[in-house]
Image (cartoon, rainbow, N blue to C red; front, side):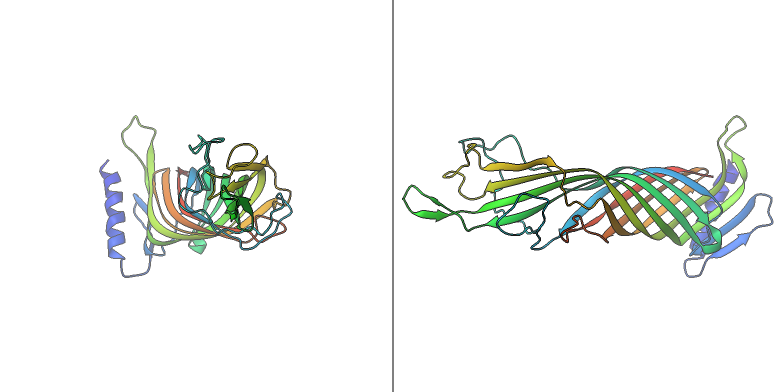
Length: 316
């Protein structure tokens, strides 16, 4: 047990000692410690890691201005990302009532609830190559505000009103990401295998703790596309309704967009921290994903994503 504590002390002391210098790589002559690399840009030891994890989206936003697409029902103008609703205008009303209905527009955002990862340490190049496979979900909206229409008010005068078309796009993907991690500061230590006690099968022969930057290319194949297109009366709900008695009419309901691009590409960058203790390993990182291709084949609709990823696993 005291040797396990000693490895941890060596890691901490080595990192502290190298705070202002480049990495120090040592193949020790000791029967106990076998390899130590610490400081800036440390060299990883040979290992292969296997992980499972997930991604939490912090912010997703679109870039789409004045676009046309054949995949939706026709609208009088063009789609954009400009949110046109004022306070409370987005509330959906019950038929022939000013009370809010028990439905709402779906939440937006991106997530990868299931992710599998394999990492290969490449000591010669001071880097770690990683391959991710994940199941992804993306939900985003486009809008069009029409102010050209009028209705006959109780005063007998033509009165303009605000009518909003909304396209909600719910998409599911199977994705893969190939990237390279570069340790920028930390420590990698290997030693002879150690056991907590004579009866334990759990052994420790390595420790690592390092900060890193990563870059990669991300491709995703579309497996499910559910587009819903609404049109909604925004500001004259008390005076005007559609034939169904509501302020909202659904024109498309969970239909596949005919112009949806079947494969999407993103460039991915991240910064994070990873640590290993024996075979167990953990990582957390902040990422940014920049689109290299459009959501639609016939219009430029780009999605940007920012969030956090966590993974836990083991390495050999």
